[in-house]
Length: 310
View 1 (cartoon, rainbow, N blue to C red):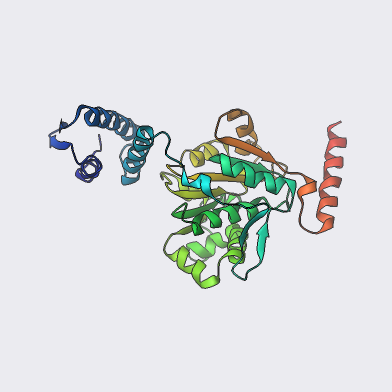
View 2 (view 1 turned 180 degrees about the vertical axis):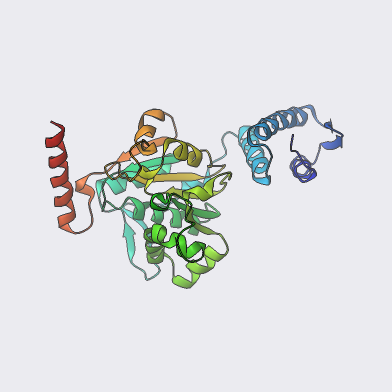
């Protein structure tokens, strides 16, 4: 079933009072009844994962073990719940300036992210969706509530292949990910940011690079999510692992997908409606923090589109 010696060793270490012995295609267990019953459940779940995915990874085993541990300790507090946001203040930039939630919508993002594992923030350009989300992720990393930050964006214009663009991988994807770098560079000193990226503590990548992964102990942000298809949105959401949080941002009025594809961000509002631990925050022109004309432009487009619909 794709279960290797390294996986068995990992389980052996997680249950030191239980002896596991591999015999051909079977595994013999010796130990307390409660531990053996838990291991049977773990093996069953891993077998199902192997059948679905064709193989098992170390990350798969870690995730199942972590979930089993949380079942044994239901009152264990999620450290991500302890991210301290005092009032509107989130954190300081590397130059000492305070980053605050400035508008009602931004304050709602902070509030919902404190009590939900997945938050969708939907609103027009200039409302600070991405910047506020990145600030919360950096704060979680600095307070050691997570081990890494993962920032993803769909690279729609390049068909997510990026093969025909000149340069190495980073040069190819930089144009699509530059807004995420810009936000991070406000919050983390340049050399430290580069070091964190080199060490994979902060990962910035096209959405396509998320396939086949499980993201544990991570603060995950999917930006420009209106440009995901339904399948891409499902793929991203099912990457989220143990002790992780996700914020998905997007503007459903600015979709760049081909006409035959429906935006995953539009569909997800109906698909996940009413699920505990998932929240939707909607921002509008009142949350715009760019030039005053941006708000006027958004209002003018809204009036124009409403007139055409009628």
